[in-house]
Image 1 (spheres, rainbow, N blue to C red):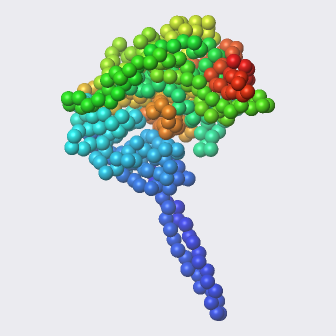
Image 2 (cartoon, helix red, strand yellow; image 1 turned 120 degrees about the vertical axis):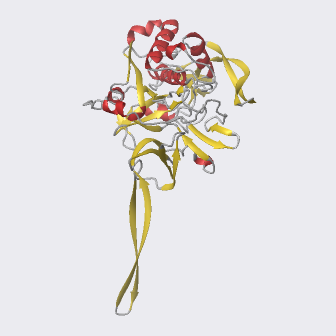
Image 3 (cartoon, rainbow, N blue to C red; image 1 turned 30 degrees about the vertical axis):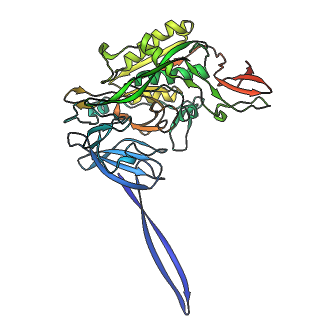
Length: 423
């Protein structure tokens, strides 16, 4: 939905015997998603079955709407980064929902996110917001807990440590559609940093697999390049403060997890939907698989915390209300997004970590591009959600050692609560 703001500029000049006033009108266009960022460009794009969507490129953001019966329904957007299509506007574009962006040229269909040639048959592949999910979503009387949430500059109710998610760049690479593991890695690093240092063993290492892009018959993909032993935790950093007052909002880099965490979870604890998954099709994890994977991981690595962790998850029903309630409690929540449909069956479901909500929209870290914040604050419509998963820690606080600072040859460990001690 686009609306116009008419700006009237009056130019007044004095003349003998009176004044003459010239009024010039200029028009600025904004979409419903943002009343602050002007529309720079708009374009109609389609899926592979003729369904239409409208893409608004904004000054520093974007919004994508579904077009149906002359109505625009918001699907996804960002206040902080341009759309994935920004640098492909000269190509024929295709869209299959959040996380699935394509362009077509003479060589074939390309995935914009990793520039791979698509081997899957996408002929007649389609994406539609699921009306049943909207119907089955009940309202909620839940109110934000003022001790666990705050309101950000865009009016979203966010968990108290939303700054952590908006600035998190340390997480594993999603090589082959293991987004569920990336989301769990982000959740574990959050709880390990701010609640209890035992969620991720400090000295645990594992061989991380690194892949390289290759071109092969019929398309392109990845093959193993090398392996490297890494600690599961990637340390953050902050500047030394003589007064000992360390706030996570002042950290130079947020602590997180390494590529080794992905492979450790993948090789030892991963549950896949219906037990299926392979490199070309991805490794689907719905809410139940996320819960089972976390339970098995905790049993093997932090069993002492099992009785202190409450796991909540569900799907299809209350997909708007439940995540909203969890975030109102201050709990970041994994969202399993709706798949697209194709002749080969349902497409890949993406899993993101939501940490804010407003008016049926959720603010989430999408788990793409380690080292970058470009997809750390993407907004999605609640109608895109298939399932949800969260965890609540009810145990005592244990200071973490995930952030380091240095002074006078001494190393200090800094906890998410601000406490620092000599390493």
